[in-house]
Length: 239
Image (cartoon, rainbow, N blue to C red; front, top):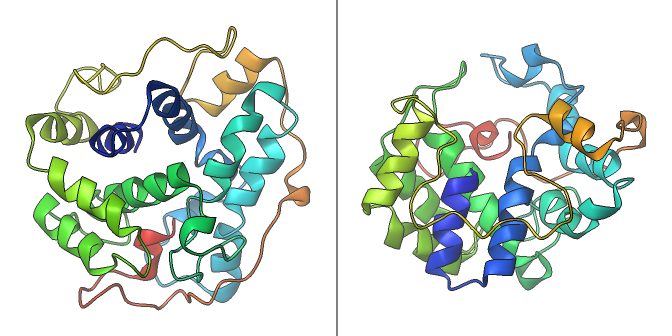
């Protein structure tokens, strides 16, 4: 998700400072899933309303976990908004259009594309061409058309293929920097971006607060919603 996000952001001409914020936000965007049972996240059958409501809490959970850490405050709007939709039917706050931070809109597209093309217990893998078509069908309703256009522009480039190969485990070290998308060294003090939530807390010398303080609101999307005309469930663009 991080590398897809950075490729999109560079295509959009974002500054190095924005790239750095996006990079760290992408690494932390799903930290709110801590406390969500694996048997819900990986459930093969359709989610119940209660299970879907539990999953929808994860952006608010992330805010609850990260907000006590002062250096992470700048990332919270992007992490919290990565499941908002352009038509206002997303969650947790039902933001619409330009109300959604640009970095949140980029994360939404990158995260959704990654979920669509990745193998999950509840769905088969799609090709990148199929994944792009799904994203394009949702431009203007779920996704920012500018961000979708940027994804469409970069997905045929070698750097994009390198990201997909890394994600598929075809590279020995999937965390190896992809040339041209690695931002400058972090300026956030001693913070070093890490993918492991436990390492994040150890680095920040903080422990997460209880998850019962998470923020959550209902969305008009239901677990059975279809995505375009394909057989994907809405979970592919939600989880």
